[in-house]
Image: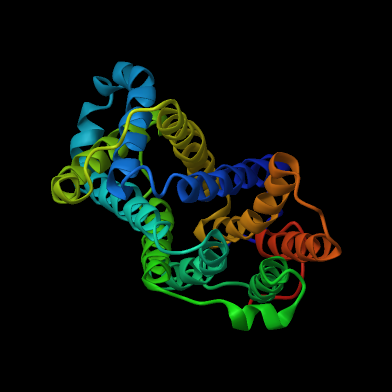
Length: 303
């Protein structure tokens, strides 16, 4: 495993993805009663595909041979990282809370490290194991609002199981893009995988539409889809893929612990929620955990 101190730019870029995804959870929960989950994911990725397409089209001809060579892998990534992950998460937000989803999402680095060990033979350093533990404690402090007894009041349901499924798919996607690095330019790579992801939505749409009807076309739904497409789709996936390329899947997975931090800050700035002492403590622990795991702080030997 690479133990060199990562560049500051990698840390900053890695932090943008959870910032955008924090807003994704909030908006998805707000629109859960309005937009059917599969259509929420489908229209998000249709728009994201159209955004990428003008940048990717000029590259198709020059990289045609590479596309043919990598096609089976691109199909798998589209199914795992675009269709499965997002449909699981959006379906989950119809049944669970943002708090529960954030708590379960905190298990992503654990799943990512496990898959990296199995697929990449990539074993974590002692500092990374400690960092995971510190970040988990920080996330729990925020979610429990500084009261440990509040965690016992959390109730889990079928939506929580769907979040777990989504987390597993995203951990697999994160490891796969490092396991077999694409030779395609990032814009072309993402455009193709998103295109396959859109196609994989179609049979799911055929199942959902007769049962839940069509997404209503209103200013609110169009604004939500636009947000989904631009921030947690186009920008977040670019940031995530670039960070995995620099830091590897295990260390990149740790940035997920920033989601409770950003969710808290968004609540303070956008919703005028109060900023409490437990917020500051949780944020400090999460940043310390991420710093240990990503190598910003050096500690111990390989273990």
